Length: 448
RNA sequence: GGCCCCAUCGUCUAGCGGUUAGGAUCCCAGGUUUUCAUCCUGGUUACAGGGGUUCGAAUCCCCUUGGGGUCACCA
Image (cartoon, rainbow, N blue to C red; front, side, top):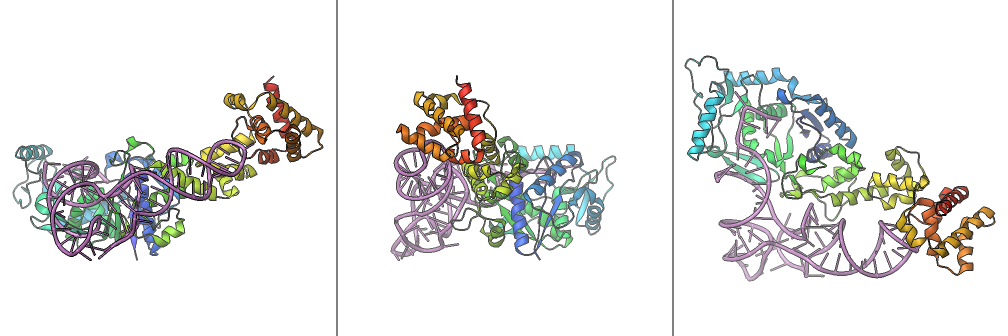
């Protein structure tokens, strides 16, 4: 069975790039009848943040990606980590290092002065003397001293990391006893049964370290897929400064969750010329080995288009629900002309609500002497009640020998306040004769 | 700077030795629409550069250039 996971650190909200990673993991697990798990990486106590955790979970709920098991919190697994650290200590695969932060810093400066790679020198690796007083030791793992570690990545291929220039005996537990990232990731993934790891390629250079941990503990290595980053418009890793990186911001801005997922799946992955993918199709087609090797730039224009396509394809009831309003035929009238729920809402309101003001530019262009006359005649016919609205429209144009626009545009302005709207006759038929009369009279009164 | 990764239209991508280099988005033009939007039709724009290999390279190899990532007692 394939088990995947997404492991956010609770530093704020769910990042749009994180959501993509989560989606890929979700799809791959589900496609294979496996499990998708969630793990909160909060080993750094000083950064632990409850609000951040709930913000992230809220975002997952919104997009509908659910964990198949209880969410794992690393902050609650101290005993587990301690047990494995003790095991490594006892087996001589890890050791206590009494070097102080200051000493470490000095070492680094010396190495840098010599243009060498900053690297722990292993001075306590085989230490069996008397430990210095007053120093709480960190725990370091014994990494290989030479040779190479190979990461067999299913997207990038086999990658060689020479120990000499990538590894040292890195710290697996801090002086305060808390374990560090590369250690807990390996332990948790192994213990949770995660056997396929799909993550951003910013983790690629961490992978050799995690492999050292897997090997020391005798755990089986998962399959790795390192997916390229999403970049901002200037080609850099997407960060908070780029705006709109919080997943929930997309909800606030009127995007539909399935449209957002559709947009994200197309970053670095494709299926021929297909652009629109339902969740079912994604589940049927997605395979992480097909992900492209190069980074992609995050571009909102495509998302807007996709979102518009999704709005067009939704039913009146679905859209009403998304807008938190009662279903109305107005939705069908305007949904083809909008690309976000915000726009949809404003278009609906434009028709449902009586105009509070009239666009000056529209009036200037479409409310001249003839328009005024025709509109007056139209109003009379409506009040007279002989003709239907459609008939009244036709009769007036015919008797005056005028083009449609001469009457339609002023009517439109009277009904919705501007010269742009869906078909005037459609709007009239939705509003009903009385409301149309009211709005035309109000408009005429405002133009006295 | 060391190490690692990457390189087709502005953007997302198809292509996996032989194609007029395709699609989508964006933009522009025309049509439809009384208007706007939708929709339809058409158009502009790409294989980073240089060497190889080959009868034949966007496709394979090397170099250069460019871009990105990463180098913590952060995750």
